[in-house]
Image (cartoon, rainbow, N blue to C red; front, side, top):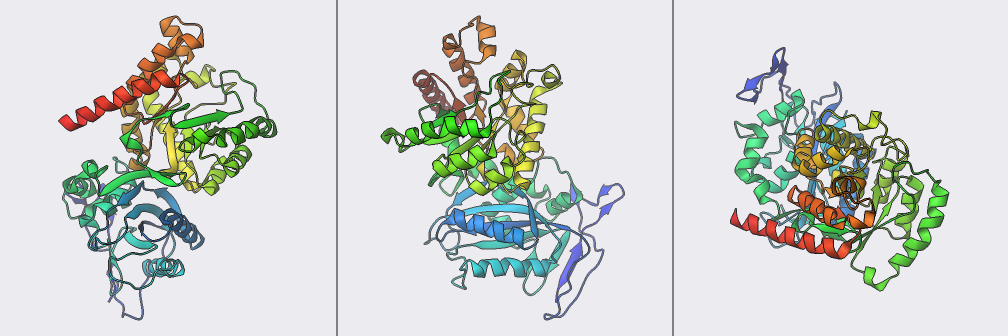
Length: 480
């Protein structure tokens, strides 16, 4: 027998079970085992969990997502990526775990059938329960429905005891409940405070970074646990190469000109023996340049426009399967310091909102949240006071983004205050080369505010500053 229970909003909001909605029946549908009753009324928002611990785990994820999109599952959001210790059957390789939100017209059992077909086509066989598998796809939520049948239970029956499921599920939400459907998902949890309360009782963010669960970003041929150590872009950890100036009022060159300048330098840098353990980022807002750079061996794309200056960039990045640095900027280098682009009533809140819009567009284009790095764009369409507000307000930017997407709020945060004009204005240092002490002060403030990557010119001095900051943060975490 199949049982569907739909959760309904009332005219005053969501039917309340304490803070969230109470399950009420709009219909209870019965059917025999061989004659399922499906829901075909309209698009349904669903949550699907992904897991893999056999073969190329990340490639398995990418392949599964592509097959889901081709099967009528429109993915709208991605959780972060986690490497986790196996549960239940512990003598097996570590898993990658994540989850996605999607919209589909498929009924719940049709959706289950599609996911099972994808699993089989990707090589999953029966095996032992909770044992190794190339891909595991589970329906966590289906619209506002509770579903109980011989082959499908929604919400998934073991969500509530599994941190490796709950962590990416929480990533798909915002700290502000923004729809009836999300409110109903909260109501279906086993905790009176909804999914947030349940996650906290499991351990919440304190679980992340422990041996059993690491939040990671896939880059090059490894999984980078970026929160453990501040990375230095400019020489120590990441080399950033750009062939087009993005300083204020810089004139734009074509993609062809940029490639002519870039590729010889990129090839030469990649051939250096000392680059074996380092990452190479290419600074470009052109999709064709990004494509050629990655084909030549670049490991990241750094886009000062976050996809706004080339309509093909986000789709291209989705196909390249490399991390994408999305920076906040209004306009382009020739207009970013115009009076219109410098108007902010609350710079941290507005930068957060505009960055989230770019993340949303990137995800809808197929770029998973676990490949996105955010940059608030210090010095780009900002006055001196705006830059200072951002440096001291990085936690505010994260919390504002978290209202809309916890996954995006967890993204690595990059700042680039190095030798910027606002430092010269504050310190009366007109020559950029004289701004290194001010850069160190800015970098220090940023790291203590939660920056994970700092872009600098003077590598040696800033590396020392970063090491001291990281040591202090480590000591502070031990004391807590």
